[in-house]
Length: 435
Image 1 (cartoon, rainbow, N blue to C red):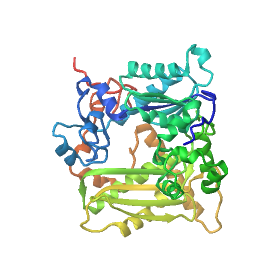
Image 2 (cartoon, one colour):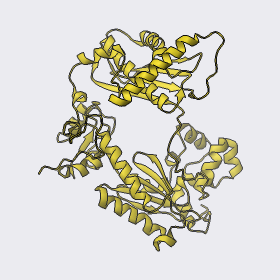
Image 3 (cartoon, rainbow, N blue to C red):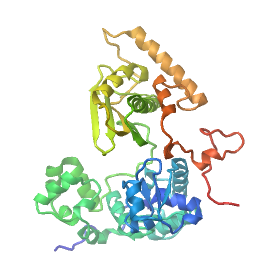
């Protein structure tokens, strides 16, 4: 095998990928020290495992497993409702710690980030490896959670490195050793290679990432076009994907989904759940000044199969009231009597900016403008008094739904400081310490 290095420079660019270890359950263990070292999972409100601690994973409990099955696997399992507010607060604090070391931080997801620390050796008077370890140590010290860190000349390589030693691991691969990392990396592990791409590459006799990178760039580009060319360059240590520090302000699509337990056969209750998803999705669309031209409705059965329909609109709109008759029609076509459903979902696609409005010759402009004014008034009220303060009459059926773990408010919402409301609270997470 050819072991020649792709580059002799250690770090033409120095990119870190920081990935929090079992983030949701780690936050729970940080908030309540009594949970440390114990098998903990979140997802009580969903009826399935949303996240599992490493202690739970070691006992065979994995994400997506039904709670009943998980408890049979691990009788001592600690099941908690998901506290997304606290997870978000910890995420922001984690990113702020990273920004103490470099302004070039890309918040890739709630629990992982890319950092460009090129040139920061001069600032901190230490190596790139030491900077990465300092960030790792500071996050553990300040938040009580662990992160795994990967360091390499590109984002694709840094992401591979962070997965190499988990949890709480650090892996730095400079340019002259990239070929060794790639020889140990299966095609399935490469960021950007999906199952179809892996199958295609396998037909050409490729098994590892190294096999892909030793092929000519023209071959990779001809087979996989621009994405293949970029991945080929990234894996060879040529950074072509910049660390993007901009906040996400645009969306290609919007999806809202809600799981409810126990499952239901009640037609009006299930429709009410769907309508609430629709209202939430369109609120988000209006907040970012977007309008969809395509709608997708999905009903998820108790056996985890899906029934769905998609519809294209003759005119893009951000009005919930305008699309509600279509939503009802799609629901009627999907719903089956006596079939148990456990979740509803709405998908908004083909989003357009609502700053430019093009009139159609045969549209009812008076009705459209009236609906727009009503929607604006509803948004104003909801901004003042909380989301869904004004909502569709269909949601009245939700007050008759059976009690379930989803109905239980999290501790932080029950224990309020003076002046707080369940929807408007100080940015302070729930703590599980008793004094």
